[in-house]
Each structure stands twice: as structure tokens, then as C-alpha cells.
Image 1 (tube, rainbow, N blue to C red):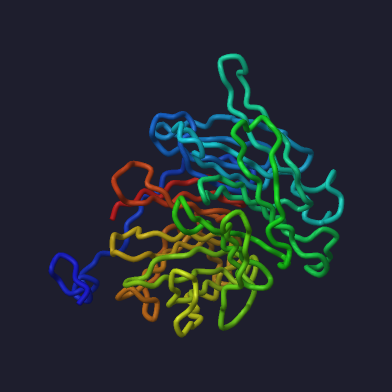
Image 2: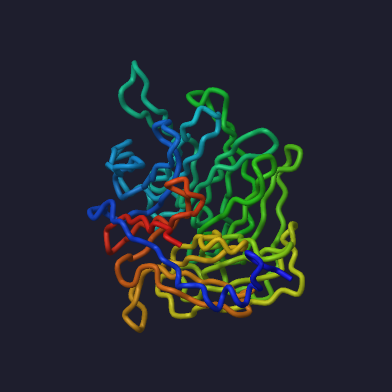
Length: 385
């Protein structure tokens, strides 16, 4: 029997208090807040918050949360995404960004899409330098992954080249291999072009064998590098409604779950339980947790409450029929979403564009970090559970 501190789980659940998160607004004057990342920028051993805003790439220093400019006005159109991770083990994150956001232009690479690696300043160069990389139109999302002793930047456009209304050529998902000298030329490989209207991706696995889960019009696909060759596989979903956001989580026992927002910019938070380590479902079932999102745009999955299995945080950015927007937490009972509870983390104070989960104060409990589009703010929700 699953027990915690020698009490049966159902008794612990019955007497557990509601989740407690303490909100701290660290910026109330952003433009859009397209994308968030968390990582150590200054090498002090603490996780900082990075933001891709409309025209600026900034970071907030852990502790005083002072806003620091990295670079601005990269392209004529907006910045749209950011990836930050320590790849070389020096204690500081490497940063890549996507810009020239122009989703209506799917053909012209001069007018739509841009990818940059940001080279940090040193004693001789006081400003960050933006190194342009190859790109496709409608650059939209990016993440760093590690696989086979190498690091890659995975970049995903919204549309395939020349697409209209999600029809036509497939999206070119591109892997850029991180070179020994980042200022040198980067090699890149198209690792898939079978999906349309892709919206977001998740990185799963461990540091030696991470792989990508990509959500889009056709559902979910996995992409992994095996001995130098990129291989793809469709993740079976019993019902394909199209996937906008997705995160892989840990259930109780030996299985996991896939949390999704369906469809792109959708109304529905769904979960697929019973996934094994190969993402094959054991009697899969689509469980709808919430169907009243409006422009659902953000997911974060972690064990916020210390239950031994993950919970789901979801954010949406427009008022729904009840006039509500914000961030909610969904907690499974007995390690399964066959029964669950839902709680507000932020009711009407966050028009949520992006969400991240990270332990910012090293107490072993992950915080939530959110950026707001219409609310024009960045908040930390400190985990007080």
C-alpha cells in the first residue's frame, strides 16, 4: 500500500490543506512576455528568470529580481521564444532566441523568422552579441536538449514553408548542433517535416538520452537521436483533437501521463495516463480535466506538493465565459487523474502567456513563474506548501 509517514494516502489526502502559493510580482510593465526560461545567468549558483519580450531579451537576478537587459531590437518584428541552459558546465546558461515573429508570412525568410545565439560579454566586449543562425519562416519555439554527449538546439516553426491555413508543406523541425566554439559556423539538420501547425514541445529523458515531444495539428510525435540518426515516432492518442501545449509528468507507480491543451490556443486541459518509458499507452484514456479555458497557452508539470507524483499547472490568457483567466493547479487523487481536485493559483491577475516550474530558493520545492500578455506582468508564485 502506498503510504506517507506511515499514514494511508487517502487519510493524508483527507486532512491535507489547500495548496499555498505566495505571489510576488517582479515586473508590472512588460509588453507581451512571449517566453520564459530559468537558469543561472551570472554564475552565482542561483536560478535567474529570463524573458523574451516584444523587443527586449531580459533577465531578472535571483534575490533582488532586478531587471537586466541582455539585448534589444534584434529584428523589425517581435521576439517570440527563448532557450537557456548550461551546456558547457561553466555554471552559466547558454542562450538562444527566436525573433522576427510574423506568422502570416510563411514563405519569405527575410520577412519572417530569425534564430540567434547570444554570445555573452567579456572584458573586451561589454555587450551581448547576437550570432544569426539558419532559420525557416514563422520561427516559433525552441529548446536545448542533450543526447549522446552532444547538445542541440531544437527549433520549431509554426507553419511549413508556403503554408496556408495549416495546409501544404510540413513544418521543418531543425536540430542545430552546439559547436565547441559557438562563434564558429553551426551545422543543422532537418529532423522532421511531417507535422502542421506545430505549437510547442517538451524535452524528456535524462542528460545522456533526452528526446523531444512535439505537439501540433496531427497530435504528438517523439523525435530522438539514436547513434547519430534522428528517428521519429507517433505517440498514440485515443482521440486526436490537435495539441497546442504538452508536458510529460510522473504518475504513482511505474507509469507517466501526458498533459495537453487542446487544440492550439484551445479550451481543453486533457490528460492521457498509463504511459510507459517508451511513451506507449497501457489502455490509454483521454480524461478532460477542464473545458473552459480561453486561449489556453501554458502548462507546467511538477510535484509541487511533495506527494511523490506530479501535478499540473495550466494558464490561459483571455477571460472565459465566466469572465475568468489565470493559473490553476490540478492535483490527482491516489496518484491518478481518475479523480482530482483543482485550485486557483492566480484568479484574474495573470493573462498567462507562459509558465515555468523551477526551485528558485533551493528548498526542494518548485515554484511557478508566469508571464502575462494582457496583464503585462511577470510573477513568481512561491511554493509555501
